[in-house]
Amino acid sequence: MAIERTFSIIKPDATARNLTGAINAMIEQAGLRVVAQKRIKMTREQAETFYAVHRERPFFGELVEFVAAQHALNHQLFR
Image 1: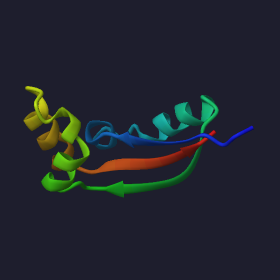
Image 2: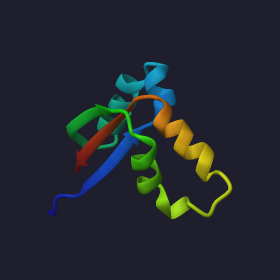
Image 3: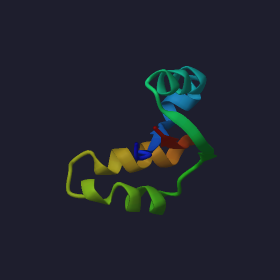
Image 4: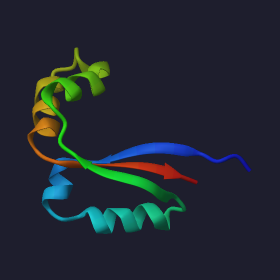
């Protein structure tokens, strides 16, 4: 069986509400393994680059501001 890899972000509102442990538990209950995680604070430039696919959408500016405002938790997941 091939190993599946994916990336996830627990967004700033969830980290601010201390939900990371509960979210990690749900991820693991779904059969995924957290093999790496890092708490980060994206710069505005990083957020604009990461969400560039949404640049033309009306919510782009709000999304970038939201993600760049606080810390998020990045995961590398395996199944």
